[in-house]
Length: 88
Image (cartoon, rainbow, N blue to C red; front, side, top):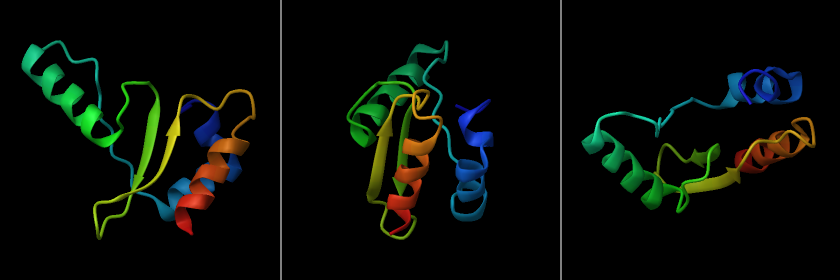
């Protein structure tokens, strides 16, 4: 997604203008960190799918929208719709 979809104007513009990125890497070698990351994935996303995107309201901490998996078939259209929906 980072190499293709995020660079498309319809997606990249929205990301740059309206969102702050935070990543949770789930491939750590340290067992304690990996366990903590998995617990956080279970709590926030209710899924261990990758990629998995959440939009979180910074004021309330509530999850506004979710998007699971890559958006390769629609060329970023579905991901842009997800971002637009999160803004409203």
